[in-house]
Image 1 (cartoon, rainbow, N blue to C red):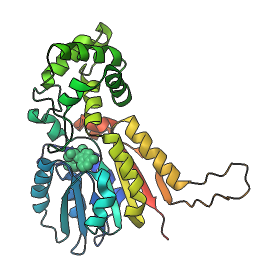
Image 2 (cartoon, rainbow, N blue to C red):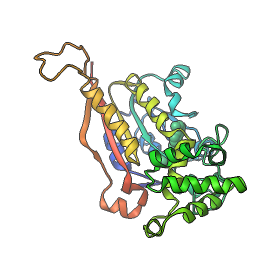
Image 3 (cartoon, rainbow, N blue to C red):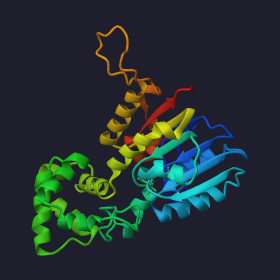
Image 4 (cartoon, helix red, strand yellow):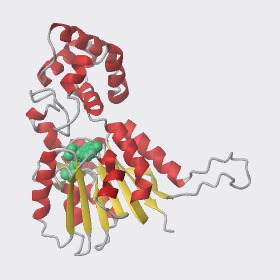
Length: 319
Ligand SMILES: C[S@@+](CC[C@H](N)C(=O)[O-])C[C@H]1O[C@@H](n2cnc3c(N)ncnc32)[C@H](O)[C@@H]1O
């Protein structure tokens, strides 16, 4: 099952995330990625008068949509909406006096709503300004990035964040184009990528610019470094017995989450042959299921975004 929000975004792995969060009606929860408030509505509807929900998003439009959606729940719990990058969550928890929480959810990436807004510049299929910033008020736009990055830097971005096998051809084509005129729109970038593709690349089922757009979006929004900062802060944010649920959409993100959860579960660095541990590193808790939780066939059919989604869950040990 998935939950539709009025935002036009279907919440991925909705039932599974809520089950894993095992909401305590009097508990405190953080949603790092409010989006349209789909997952948060589910959390909120299970909270009682002593419950608190702290919702983060760095996109003002998402916060507004989530506020409307969450008001419609008429929950007795207290809702705190925070316009901030979750990479700053440790600092935000101190400043906003957020106590250690019973659960934290992060549903990474962009929402379908953001993708569908041509003026936000995320999509190769809607022409708009080449922007791609989730936070419309800060940072470099995608146009600034593609108009200034070196060929080597562009190639690295396309390889690392898009696993684009034609990275070099595409970055050379980008440089050639911008030597004539700077990129301003998503349609220009999509057309240049398409022209740079060899015939083989054009036979793929997906749009030829899909991987390039994903890679540039990840670079523009610092998505991997934000996830690293979140993972660094997470153990201290969770209360004993608290759970973290993280939904990722590509292998780079999933690897970071899987490795962090493994390290927290088994941090001992002693050589295997040592009869007892001498490094003194104590386990922080348990990874819930070694394999990630994925969408069932029905959800994948209803929501193509769910096809690449992986949910990993960590439960902090009780002390
Ligand atoms: C996939 S959507 C979340 C959808 C939401 N779970 C729902 O059910 O409606 C991801 C949201 O997280 C936000 N986001 C992504 N990275 C972020 C970050 N580093 N800090 C704060 N918000 C972020 C995006 O702006 C977007 O609104």
